[in-house]
Image 1: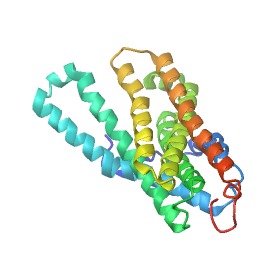
Image 2: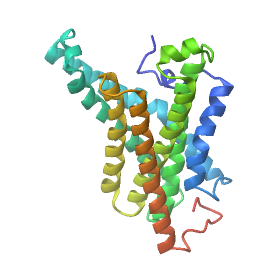
Image 3: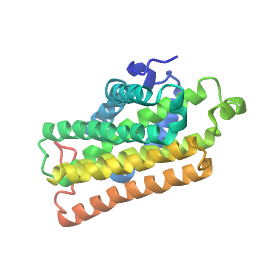
Length: 264
């Protein structure tokens, strides 16, 4: 059994097919928000930072909070009775992920923005946030896909996972788009001088995304409905980031042109 406090538990086994699939999942959303800047080393440094932070944030921040909440629920309801309170227990746990993951991504984006002295350039905040979010989502995709493909890409494994491999790949593609868009929105908000407002938007969208897992676990919706919900929220989040990028570039055409020394 994997240790939730060990970051390696959220990395996955080194497997080239999973790595290629994760990169493929990352490319569309990254290109949509950072077109023209993919050859810059700063972009890929931000992507790498997001990838590294994924297992660290889950093991050292999110998992301890969730374990503490599990302990509280077991003390309140008893270990055997807790199964009867699935929704009341799962909902608070789901909403832990939003503040932790979106907060960690934003902190990484802030550090990068300060490094290139672009803390008050909204387009820079959006681009850096998108790069960090893409790396974060790609590492999550690698972890999930490697868990599926580790025993081999067979129908038996697919039935064990509850979803066909193709559905898992599509879901990861959408999830990476969500991570990229949400981090871009939060990064934009920080650089625009309204960090809490836009971070709250990213956190709420993250919580809403994870609610689909609760409803499916409770038997209230099926796989098709859950995947439709993931697709809807991913499109809305990425669309919001693209809209912010478009509006910012239109207001400040000079700031939309990349420079040599910075990401934007």
